[in-house]
Length: 113
Length: 114
Image (cartoon, rainbow over all chains, first blue to last red):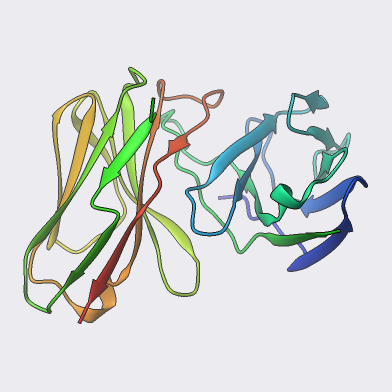
């Protein structure tokens, strides 16, 4: 299973962009990069995922490097409600096709006024 | 309107007891999961079911027995509870197996074993 490395914590000012990096140097060609977040005392929430192209949705943008060894999650205008632990996950599952998510320690993002 | 619901939200019990946690999803999903988040906040998958069939069992002790009466429900029964079972248990579901489908998580059940 490909592993991911994320900074333990990051700070961001409210209204500014939050850029959360993730390294996944052992990712294989058919593995996707997923981002989830967990706000305190809640269940994890899906944010975005991608294979090799950059992706954008209503929550965030995902930038994946050309060699796919790292990616960055961008929250364009962070709010206080974005304070959470952000998990970068590389999909595992082999040939079964079933989506087993392996969560690491994540990045604790603190958005301050 | 709750997509994935779990009951109870909190469960406090004595060692050695048997307890169940229920999970229901109203999203029409085929696949459901149980995850455990321990005191150090590590979130690990325990089981997954697809169309009521067990797909993933992550070397969870036999004291844990998931049961899926239908596609919309995946319950977790725990026998002979131990102190180490104290954790937050999350149920999740996804539309179908595959890389493009996000998982929707429930609010969690905080189990405390005394």
